[in-house]
Image (cartoon, rainbow, N blue to C red; front, side, top):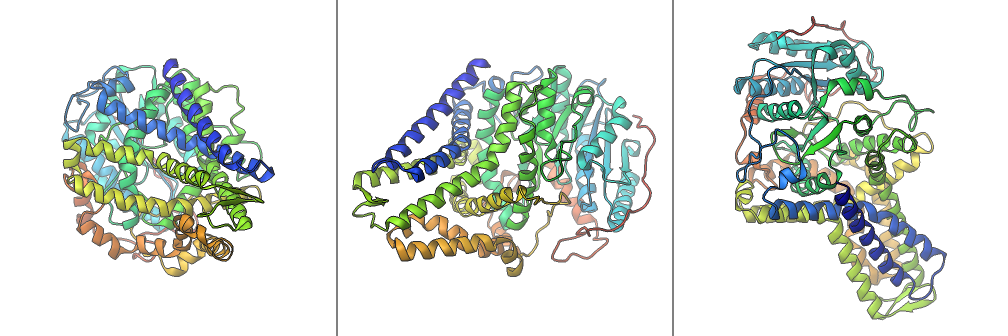
Length: 627
């Protein structure tokens, strides 16, 4: 493993140095000044994150297509039996009958219909495999909206009444939201932790097949030093246009990327907070999170708890691994750009808290690196925008036609340098989108995978649309991240509440209220270039259009009509739309059988939570689980 990490480090450092030197040669053609130095520093700061993505993807696709034993190479665990063909690469013998697993779903003012449907579908999938022992289900509610609490109770009671094993189903609601999700899980561990060996954590929109759960449990049984095993999570079939296109790109991009990262991270892998199984005893002993010094947003309770818990688990001597295969582990993605940005900024706030954790002496090297990478993921955005802004200032100040030379201050760079600049731009675009390119190649190189996606032409068409989508999305999100990070220094923060998961209309007013900074930035930059350096407009077109079109982009991609059209013609369709697994069919059938209850659906979606309402009914605490 040390050799793999050395090779990966050499690849990343070597690539970053080469790209930095290339940029330095361009900026220094007419001599260096302070602006050049700052631009080069910003540029170098953006490189590690994208270069790591490049090599993760390259290593991942090479392993998948050149190593017949690639899964065992990446995940050398006992209990992992690799098949040489077919979509299911791990056989699913029952786990040890001695182990007991709690399947827990912590929620806060989520849609009760969705929550119970997803948990019930998981239970049904386990039961369909003949598994009736060794598992118990816990709905851990922190909800404080009276209507939602009442509906949670009603729907859970209905599920319990219809279940063949109601003794396995438990509903617990706290009467406060102390320490939020972390406190919710801590109370579960204190109350019920002694009764279980493992805890499988689900989000409100999570779905897992019974086969996937049994495989995780079996692997935990076979590997006593394995503390956390994270699954690769893929998006459920979506009706929202935004969610469809976004998760199509994530689907093929994450597969190669995660395989490559698992190859060198090994036993110090990531934990994403859900759709993962945890060994309860070491989790309870070693993963209790402290409260950070200072006040929010950067102090107080640790919000992005998952990777901190993973690093603490590894520091205690237990392995943290990711299983990089698509194997019955699902989630739902935000239905609109506005919801995506809100969720992303929540993660940004949580990850930036890691700045005060990096100096802890307890971390192993890879645990510290995981926290640093989580910070870098968001710091890259302001560095990139800073580089772009300084570049535009220099171009506007020079005001020279690039056909005759590129002005930097008083000097002029010749056509050769201009050609090198274009080549560097193309190289950076390729590196940035390397994980998605590798993912598309992974599909196209396999006839079985092409068939799962409906054929090569459909894959190519979806990938082209998603590439354009990504080019419009990234600059919009970068501005949001940059302004939010700047605001954190002045106490700006975002509330961690229930996420929007249902298809909804985004009005022009809503989009303008959130995205006016991007539109204004695009207008100012386009005007300045048009007046001072019009020849540069074609080269800046993609960036400027992303900002100028941010508002209509948000409205259009959230439109139910657009989503319905994409679904009808299976544009950006995931494999589960062509061959629907039993657990997804169960989820859909339960949705059709349940009539809407509670509030009517409005712009915020069904059962949209209210803010600031009082505490609901008393907590429901079942007896100690028996099986």
